[in-house]
Each structure stands twice: as C-alpha cells, then as structure tokens.
Length: 234
Image 1: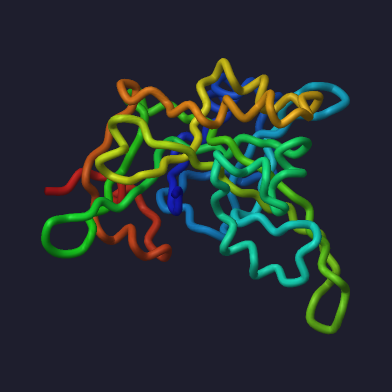
Image 2: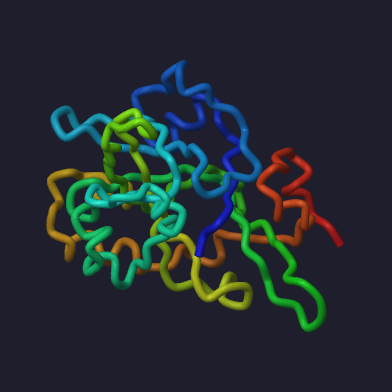
C-alpha cells in the first residue's frame, strides 16, 4: 500500500517542467511536506476535458464515493488495488472519467525486521525528481443538516500495484508510479475504456531508477513533518 508520502520540490519551474501544467496557482499555497498522511490535503494534476490543458488541484486523500452516506469511509479508501480497480463499485466510474496524478517525490514503507518493530524506509527516484502516482478522484456532497454544511468535497485515492525488484523485499505492494511518457494517456478524459488504461497501472516502475534508505521512526506520527524525516539513519 501507500500510506505516507513526501512532496518537497514545490517550486513552480520544477512542477511545470515535470507535469506540463499551465502554472501554479498562488492560492494553492504550496510548501514542502515530509509526512503527508491520509485525510490530509494533497496536490494532484488533472486535465481539462474541453481545453486539454493540465492544472494542479488540491484534493483530500481518501476517496469518498459519490453514493456514500458517511464521509468517514474515505479513511479506508486511501489506496485502490490496481488489479481489481475496474471491478469495484467505489472506483470503476472514476477509472473511466476521473483520473489524476498525485504528485510526490518520495514515499515511505515499513520493512519487517527479524527482531523488534518494523523499520521505516524512504523510497525515492535516483534523481530525486518529482513523479506522478496514478490516482482517481470523486465528488461527494454532504446532505445539508445541523451537522453538515452541504459542501462538496473532492477526494482521491492512490492506485497500487505489484512491486518491482527493489520494493519486493520491503513490501508486496507499491504505488503505481507512471513514467512521464504515460501521463498523457492516463489523464486523457477521452479514454473511457478501462481496458485502455489498465496496463498503465500494472507495470511496476523500473527498479533501477529507484533507491531507498532507512529513516527515523519519528515518521510514525503524522504530527511530525520536517526535513529530518527523510534523512538516512543507522
């Protein structure tokens, strides 16, 4: 699965070059994040169906299906299994029409140890460039009541797939990181046949382009969010 990730490279030039977006809106208030956790705000790339342009959008991590009665279901839908995403009622409509990229430049996983607690590791690309994880998004509108305001939430999930050779000894899943040449096909709103996009999320990102190292167990608390979290330990 993918339960925590990092986005530290948030300057406009880097993001425009990496994702071919039209620019970074000032009101996004981008800043480095070292411990993005479920239900928090994340930065995504979406493509406009009319103009074909790409832009950044904030979403809440943890997909709430449009038909859900209770928004707390989102905390259990931070990931969607790539092999079955086209079959699940919570995800299949979004797979056809609401695909996005969730931007990161690293993520965390926890590796089992012979003795003692699991060791967190930081996983990133060899060149530390930002990358897009295949995601889906949905709109969910609260029923206006004394408790809820009736606002519409935009929520997302990160698709996971089989691990590559580097990640397999650490975990049996990894986020579906897409190579840049696949961004256009994944974001294309005219591709509504699931069979056209499924192959994109079932190919593990090349192991030789990635690296990892052990990091502090301070990452276990979402309250911690500073550069020391991605520093090598041990």
